[in-house]
Image (tube, rainbow, N blue to C red):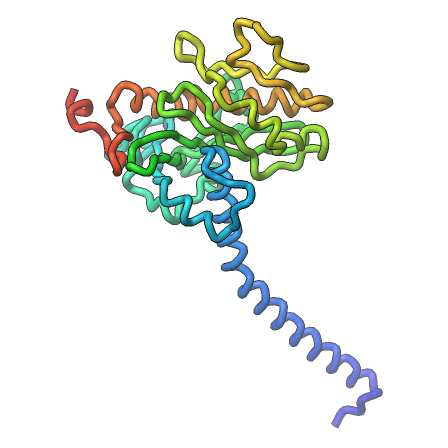
Length: 289
């Protein structure tokens, strides 16, 4: 029998304590994992609603799922670059029907070679080097079930971090209705002001594309000059955060462009993809053409 005050007794007690603590910590971690995943899901949903203008700042988290009933999540095939990159039967710019939207993680997919593509430097406005092959989009419907807005996930480099957010387009797919950022590590009070509701509000009503259909959002240094012919496409820059401001401009123009959501937006505009119905489906007659 070991003596409590002996060296071997001390080591045994320490070992038992370590084992007990490790079991407790592991149990707590497993128990919290589900809650953490749910909090992450709710955070994303809340930011989709904020971008779409459906979220009341005074509302509680219990209302997120209720509000989200107006939102339909679908997966879109982004430009693949090489043959077979999307999957059999899948078409660039249209909906992906082979992946489970409920379990798909686009952020994780963007880091995996098989589910992502490398972005050529000349096209990489957002500075992210790789992006996912398939991306979620959020179709927002009014109370009658009619298509009213489209919310797109966006990300790109700021000064210190990658910025993750959402941008909402009106049903015309030209007019911006909102923007929000939910994950970044920019400097508080400077680049961190991308989360300031006052700064975000000025995006509402801005025109995202030029006359030729090319993405053209300009986050200017300083303030937008009233009466400027380009004012409807310009956003006030963040004071003391020029690099972050440019980063936001670049990531918006990239994700609305031909290397990302551009083909999908074109398919909706031309009627090849119909989002007006309760369930977004490719237009059969357009596909036959």
